[in-house]
Length: 113
Image 1 (cartoon, rainbow, N blue to C red):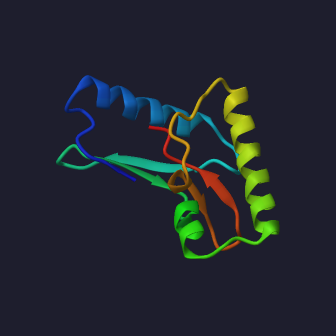
Image 2 (tube, rainbow, N blue to C red; image 1 turned 30 degrees about the vertical axis):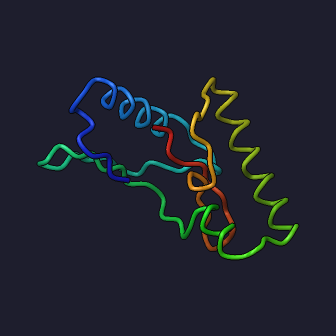
């Protein structure tokens, strides 16, 4: 994930710090994992995370989902939300494009910024 010019104002800096802090400390199989972070010479921040194939928004717009997939995705989403809520975190921007899915139908919640 590329975060452009996060140090250009205090609000963006706080949002970037919050996301990095959460990704670093929250570990769950249904949350995106943070592998590395680096800052470019142009002061853009890059978060290196798990590689996943698509997001729920693309999947929903491409074809109707079978009931078993809906149940499995719902189960994984609720597990991830239960974990972050038990840690005192509220996502604030949960939407289909912030729910990533890999080729094994493993779901990960992302974008805590």
